[in-house]
Amino acid sequence: MTNQLPTTPQEIGLTCDLSEAYSFYPIRNQPPVPIVAAFGKDRLHQCRLEGSWDFRRAVTENRDALVRSFRQLVPGTGNDHWEDVIFQFGERQFLCGDKSRVVGYGSTAEDAEKIVNDFTSGYGTTPQKTGGRFQLIRKEQNDFKCENVTLGMETVLDDEGFALRYPDGSRDWHREFIQLLHERKSGLSILEGSPGTGKTSYLRHLMGTLQEHHRFYFIPPSNMGILSSPDFIGFWAAQRQMYSDQRLVVILEDADAAVMTRASDNQEQVSALLNLSDGMLGDFLSLQIICTINCAASEIDQALLRPGRLVTHRVFERLDPGQAERLAASLGTKLPQARDYSLAEVFAGRQTEIKTRSSIGFSHG
Image (cartoon, rainbow, N blue to C red; front, top):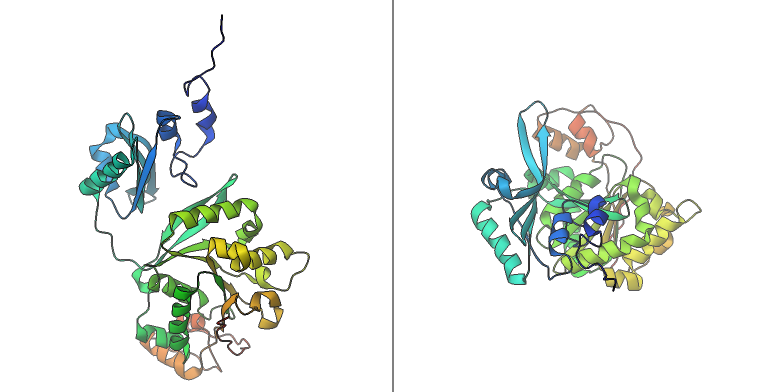
């Protein structure tokens, strides 16, 4: 009797092996469990579209087709929303959706596109006007996942609001920075300033200003170590392939440890920043990196300030009394008398004295 090798997904234990895999959006284009189980080794094509959909109505009208779902309840309100859903509309017709995108899966590229278009025709909505957005990066097991975060319209400042919040000359610097971010494929920008001087507010404004052509990613300070992870290179390579028509911008807040002169406790982080922002790896990944720091310029590793790598190093200064009073007046508040103010102090209505430093301009290397 001749022994036959197993041939079906069930015979080789494929479904069992996938039991611990992600149920919803895959990492690096790997389909979720139900899709892999249905297609096995056969042809599988994907089509993705970003936008906005009425998932509540879609779930109500297609409950029998709903094979995976994640529903978020809002405590104390009676409200809820569908975070992630997977529909199976036929034997090999799937649609996976979340807040900002859907992916169709079919046996041909045309089938996958039709699934997306048909779903959009029935359930697509006009998205509410928002400010910018960014992808919050977090590590799950041995891989990385992006969570889309959308900012409100109030984060995008008009000319008057920008002029009230930032010292004279800031608008000219901002326009030049925007131009450089359009022109440069990669590089490092450093935003320096004491706490509360408006670095984060500026980044929110920047995300709204550049949202059409730039895709922003945020790495929390507690996860800064992932910059030196070998798997992180693969993640960026996949993102670059998926969003080849956009500039990729990485935001590192409170990144003092990653930019200070190399020592035993930050060697890997500084080296990772050097490699990602310049050189052959920087050319391949085409990443623009923006760091906010509180340390002084003299503490920054000099290799990061090399012309060609550095796009800009900007110091966010405290406001003088005249400008602070104009901003406070626009907010309908009054300030105690002081020598200078941070942006946060104006909004809070109190003042703490902090020493200031002079600004540094652009590097066009």
